[in-house]
Image 1 (cartoon, rainbow, N blue to C red):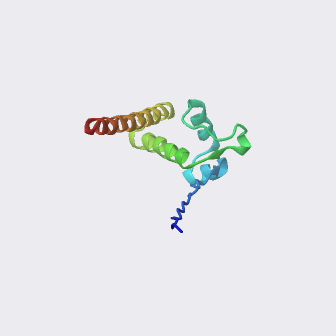
Image 2 (image 1 turned 90 degrees about the vertical axis):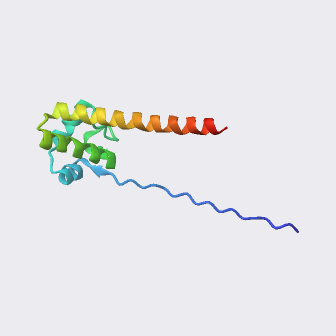
Image 3 (image 1 turned 135 degrees about the horizontal axis):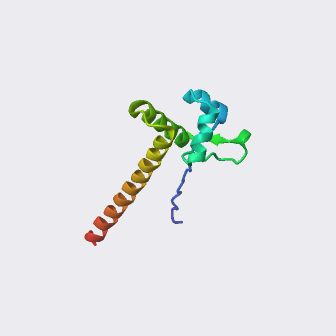
Length: 111
């Protein structure tokens, strides 16, 4: 009787903790009004529509910290800091696309 190989795969579910509005404000030492302004500028998009059920993840936290650093270090107003963070994220996405394209070109050159 032929031997059969047993292949076992595991799937790791990525758990990304979420914060409520109150938890986020406490963590970043900011007010809910600050969060609301970032939402109005489009810098943050909470994962729920209703104010009381807004949930924020690590990416939101990172964006808030960037805004706060820009405001503190460069004395940029909130609108300018929000715009700068959006542009930095766009640059990061474009860099990732360039890297993927460069990798695919290198693979194509080998063939």
